[in-house]
Image (cartoon, rainbow, N blue to C red; front, side, top):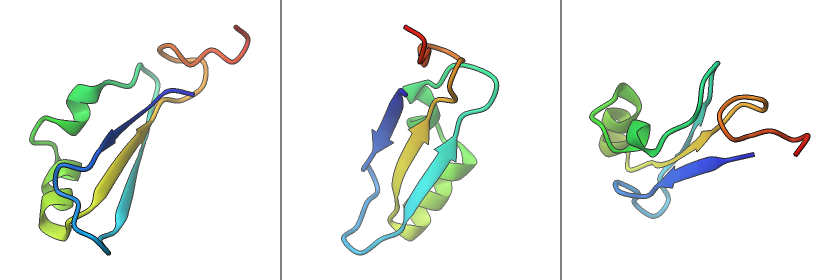
Length: 63
């Protein structure tokens, strides 16, 4: 399973946000663009993880 992490706004003791991938490939751009999740991460000092759904993008467990 592929994943991406952003600690750009993380503050010690801050929450961890988990962004679950949908029906498409995960991309680091979701964690660098001014998306809703990143605006919330900035506000709350969160660490953000994005997971790529199995069988989409490069997450192929049969290989």
